[in-house]
Length: 396
Image (tube, rainbow, N blue to C red; front, side, top):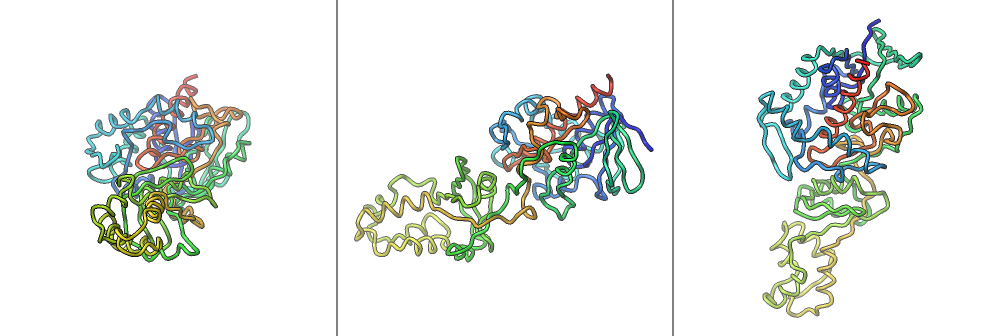
């Protein structure tokens, strides 16, 4: 049996970073993971280049039952703080778009950096060892694995959510949280492609077609590209909106976000012999223009048509209602929305209020960021908050 100040369950972004911080501040830390190698989700992120943070990180770009919860951790460990660490390790990076930062080389550089930070503090890592049981008694946690038993005064749940199960992701964090009496906000796929059915199946024929749009779900709108797929809708704008979409509600698409308010009436005056189809082909990919024109059913040269149907076509193109019948689920979701309730945790330390020594960080918690490096920044910020608290408790 081995004894530590803290055991971190999960060798992903949040877990490795938390352990490195705690270890470098004097805590004896062990990271445990059932996978055969650390950082698997990091390695596939950002097309293999890891979108490791976002310059525009702010609390209002995160979803949570408590929209204020993330403020403390995010303010105390910022994107600039993580960039400083990346620079210190000599990792070259670039901004791709919208504040999204990627490695010039490979995501492997981020994993290697996290492992180096852990080793620098003398932290230990054990992979490929399945957790059989977690117990708590007399202020100590005992973690039984397939090989041995580890004990510590503090335990960190950093096993993420069930998104991308092919990498070994599961709902283990929620089971463990419930075991210790913590509430869980219903987990659901987020940053996920949406599926279409019924009469909207015809849009699947556009598979591979992409266009810049504004996608709106609930009160949230995102101006990025939408991509039609053989199952429905994807692309950055759709993935972003999916986190705010509720089953049964419409998803609104503005297909011509840059167009003037009365662009079609203007076209009627300047190009009276044009048709709606030809006008749409000037602004959109041809296949998409043709499908939209067919659905609108406005035929004839613009100069021969009354203003009323043209205005109606303008309005629909600016607020086209899709009715997704679902999403592609956790298998294709980049992250999980919901998770361990923030009402159970300290926003300053990530420690459970009713179970001293128990922490939850990263994707396991009910804090979900936008697409584009925001979820990694939450992993770093929440991991840093818990890591510092763990070290302080170990010293005490």
